[in-house]
Amino acid sequence: MSRELMELALWLSEHPEMARKHLKPVRRKASLDPGVYYNRGTRMIERLYSPQHAALGNQMFHVNSDPAAPVEEIRRRVLEGKS
Image (cartoon, rainbow, N blue to C red; front, side, top):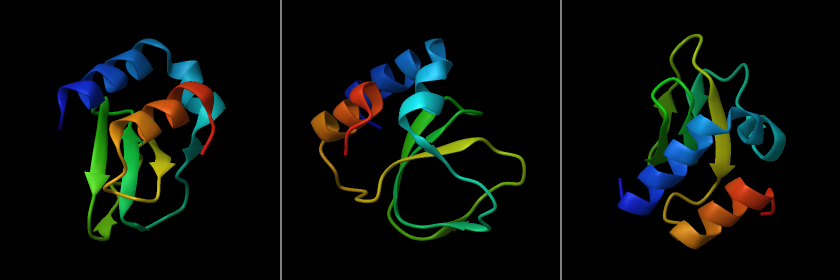
């Protein structure tokens, strides 16, 4: 994970209401599609390049469907809620 994504994940962990306000929660999915996700349990922004199984009871938020999205686009989506 890059430094910019770590700082953005730290900011999201300090402002949890913004994740609920600007990002779409992942619910009732057994597997996650490739993309960028914010994992509230580990307080990390993760890039998934292949489908993966989601842990039961985790709190994940979908940020972007492109795992290779630039950091500026991810930051804009998290801070402003725009895609």
